[in-house]
Amino acid sequence: MDPHLLRTFVTVARLASFSEAARELGYTQSAVSQHIAALELDLGAPLLTRRPVAPTAAGERLLEHAGPLLLRLEAARADVVRMAAAPAPGLTLAATPTALGPAVLAALPAAGVTVRVLAREEIPAAVATGGADLGLVAGLAAPSDPLRLPDVAPLTTHGVAEEPVSVLLPAGHPLVGRPGLRLGDLADACWLDAPDAALPLDQLRAANGGGAFRPALRYEGTDLHTLTALAAAGHGLTLLPRSAAGAVPGTVAVPLTAPRVVHRTELLHGAGPGAAAGDVVRKLAGGM
Image (cartoon, rainbow, N blue to C red):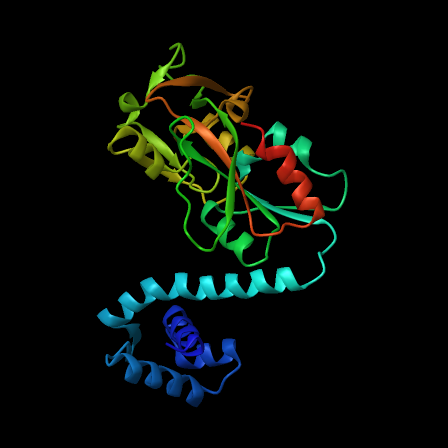
């Protein structure tokens, strides 16, 4: 499949409009229609209905493949350009909020660093496509087990930190006096659904082998202060690394005792990181 046609198809499906896709891509509407027609002819199946503009069943299946395919092409281009070009000065680090622990911060250069706090799923793509020199992703895992990251490009990963996790409770919660909590006992509690700031609820369900873990409130952001303020106000429980859960006003952090899981941080980079990035990799890669 021609990637130009595939990109046009993805844009039309996302915007649900041939004319809007034409404006975004810089094509005429006629050219966009020709692209879609050529792709449908190539695959032998209609991919979009026209009124309204929406993917057919075949189009939905193609969309499942199209995102990873286009990302892999963009990553390949960025990888070759990065190898051929002179190293850019400075360092751009993409990280999830809970990945920025003391060891990571101590390893950063004194100047020339840009830190981008991103959603967990965006970080491998940012590193693969050149949007960041390094990535730091955190998640829930069994001790010494690697995180499950999307396969967007040939990236190198290093485990750089593991620490215990705690349940953050509002100060008046009836479980505050417990020395420890089991995740299974909290499956029916109301939780904060904050996939980009806290440990995502699907990771809690996977670690527990199931359970409702019902969201009481959804927070779509990456700011830990906002997240912990919501927990302190009683809007739901959240699970955080011990270093992030301690000494939060209006809350009590109770250690999670079962199952045996940790908050794990992994460092990601492509081939041949520049001088500044390589120095950070050397400092952090031997941390575990």
